[in-house]
Image (cartoon, rainbow, N blue to C red):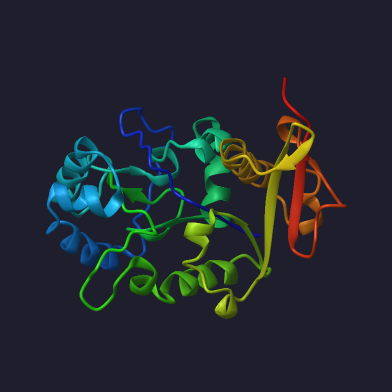
Length: 258
């Protein structure tokens, strides 16, 4: 079982890593090509392209300027510990045992606009480059065109190592659009998390993101091997809904929070 998640905008490069083990990203040559284009962008262009404040644009211009290889633990951090958004709050990787990290390294992948596909222990340097960014590289007008089929082929390589053909999609639509299901050698299952609000069940972004992280943690810590085991997920009050689920979309609902 291979799990894919999205990266996060927020990063944590200040807290110490909770594991000394690290690996290098497998698609760094592609990352270097993208960085060369990013380094040509002015802060004003970054602000316009990414729809972010001047302050954030300046920060990311500096990140592009100082981005360099080789990566080591002095200038980079393991991806699973560097990202710090809602999904990663649910994952709570800082509490992982080394066995958890080892399992995650085999069964979890992070989709990235800059790095393509990251393993949890792959070192990364700080960046902001969302998959939906319309970065013009000359040949390609956006990141979906740039990555083309390479992300899917990299996932296929990871799937081949699993011993099964199950991919659990816990990524956002923006990021999973970079995957081409037709060439993926896997059955794709997508958990959906709905919260009851005013008597109606709906996806509430903040809660859904955290729940996707909790599901990833559930899979990793329980070493799940069967799709049917996903239905046992009951963290934070979520329950599998047979009625709302359809096909490979597995719906989990939660009653209204007080």
